[in-house]
Image (cartoon, rainbow, N blue to C red; front, side, top):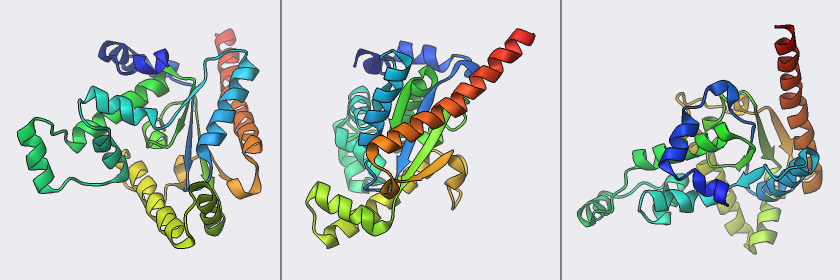
Length: 240
């Protein structure tokens, strides 16, 4: 937790953001369609990575970002949550917040999110669940970007069970949340493509694998992508 709080110290974050790009990472982002159990996968993945490296360096991050950014901007957590959900303030709400001295624009929220997420990704050993991470961290070389998907009604059943929802409520929740997550990924991209598949190194079907299996597969992918690149770089350094 101490390491996490460091990202909200402006001096510490500024130092990280100034680091040369070749030293960025490693980072793993997990994007997901609603109902694919990404948090549980991330938690097991971090355990696997720490076990294999014999360290406690790896952490996973999700909603903690919202609370810390709200504190940094001196605003309510709901303001940051609304940005993530794509909820725009009404003109009246903006006026009330402006007169009360509590107005925080979408641009300020977006910049705070981008700076915090990028500093985490640059320092590395982070598994980032959602939060637009695949867009923000896409140019980091030592990165792996995973998307979890599953058939629509498999996800509906999972949501109904986990959230104790009716079929109709679960359908509405899944469709709405999927759209918001897609829009969030778009929000941090310079270009707005209709298809975002190119952002991901791999797409995995949650309905085909258990949570432990997914964590193991992603861990193996990380070792192959990042580990092989580092090995090639080491060989090049020896030749030089």
